[in-house]
Picture 1 (cartoon, rainbow over the protein chains, first blue to last red):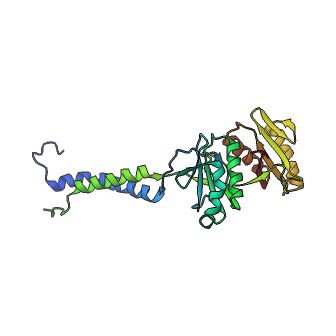
Picture 2: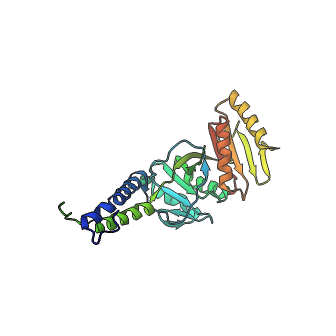
Picture 3: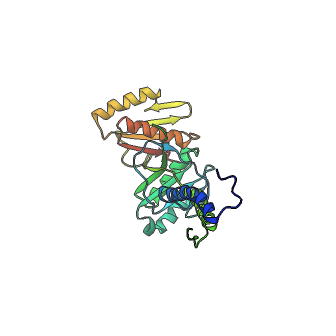
Length: 136
Length: 125
């Protein structure tokens, strides 16, 4: 037993925390490898869940729809009526593919209105981002 | 006696801990999926003929104007999809229906065998 020792040598102390460092390093590597660093959105969005099997690729252009119906394009609020004009200007960036990240609680009619404007803005492929259903 | 470590371990652990906390907070484990969506315009040209219209109301579902429940809708649709796999289905959600309900409906139709599902927007909107 080590209780009786009057003084501990530094290397002894080091030996004691080595397992801790091992674990912390492993956790660090796990989070670095398994998680993905992504830019956080300006608004909090809780996407709808779906059974879709298609995984999301990095979108060239993303439009956010907040729970209160606000539309955000490239970090800025945009009015519904200005959307198609703006998309037509940005046709080089989106190259016809636009991702829509809408909150699950938002009115479906609002989303359809936005989809309609996106189509009018020249996008040929519109994808709705959802999260995978949890559990079996 | 062992040679003492040149780098003391305590500052190293400090840094590693800070990195760990950073990666824990900054990384996201969200599993993103996509749904391809089309929008047809009611009263517009093309694409509407021969399509089945499913109305998603707050008080229930309607298929071509006839009220029916979930199971009946799915069985009707799957028999239609057996005859014609390319059968187009249009979903028209009512005002006030949350997106999640519409996505659930799309999932169920896709599970029944529907390949061509799109939303339909009312003409005035």
